Amino acid sequence: MQVFHIPWIYTSVRTILAIWHQLTKTEVRNLVTFCSRKRSTWIVRRWFCFQIPELTRVSVMMRERSRVEDTMYAMQKAGAGSLQVISDFDMTLTKFAHQGKRVPTTHNILNNRLLIDDDSTMKELFNTYYPIEIDASLSPEEKLPYMVEWTKVHDLLIQQRIRKAELARAVRESNAVLREGCSSFFDCLAEQRVPLLIFSAGVGDVLEEVIRQNRAFHPNVHIISNYMDFDHTGVLQAFKGQLIHSYNKRAGALSHAAALRELHGQPNVLLLGDSLGDLSMADGVSTAQNILTVGFLNDQVEERKESFLNSFDIVLLRDETMDVPNAILRFIVSSEMSKVHREK
Image 1 (cartoon, rainbow, N blue to C red):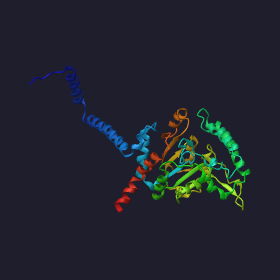
Image 2: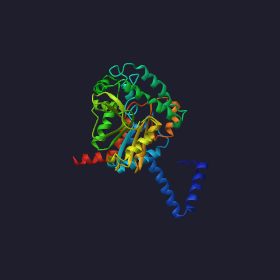
Image 3: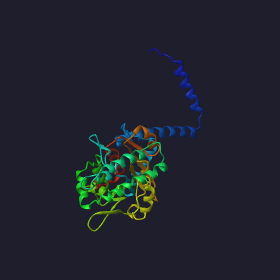
Image 4: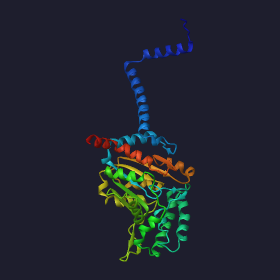
């Protein structure tokens, strides 16, 4: 048998052996521990991807994947009993578009001949202020006065003397569509007794009707939104309480926090939104330990991608489903689900 000597390999091995022999026992032990940790991290991440393949899709982006993993493992360890979900509604739980057409917001659902005589003003307001809301070149402070102006739509609705009895029919006749998998998301939260706080700058009465018609309005659902005030004949006469728009949700969260006592024992938060203004929805959670934020980037993706990645933990690009939130929820409550199966 011939033996071929390869000098550069021989030299490198000899050098490594010489260094190894010069190390103390403590240094060797530390080196082995370091290598084991690196391998352990690699194994954990591969196992994480195996458990949640939805997070490997091309439509999913994360700036700090390790932070997402650490947060999710901490939330899983704490279990469903420590979890609450805080979510926006329009274009977050509902689709942005369906079959090539824009899905109406709760305000736009009211843009129905049953309820108002002239829909041109509603469309004009939307076409004026929505582009400002999503303009990546403007700061929240710059957008704020325009968002307040947008609420002139409430004055228009009051002038139209909308009747409460017609709301359900208007929702049925609209093209409002929840994201695919949204009903499963609601059902799992109800089954695990996880509170769901929907925080919306839309119209609460319409929002509730959309959820009811999808048979998803469970006892664990709480809503903070703009609610209509009807007179004794069922005609709209005003809107109740503090006005909520896209960029004052922090104030709304703080003002309603004390009233939502059911949420006080849940320090872990899964937050879902489609706007940077939605990130403040969890500010009312005084004892928050872990917050995982998911942002649906529906429109002007390239222009807004950087700001979303700098703000949300997970960013979903033009994703009309609830696949990722459902996968995250299943992962967090998996320990409770396995207990139930064992008991059965």
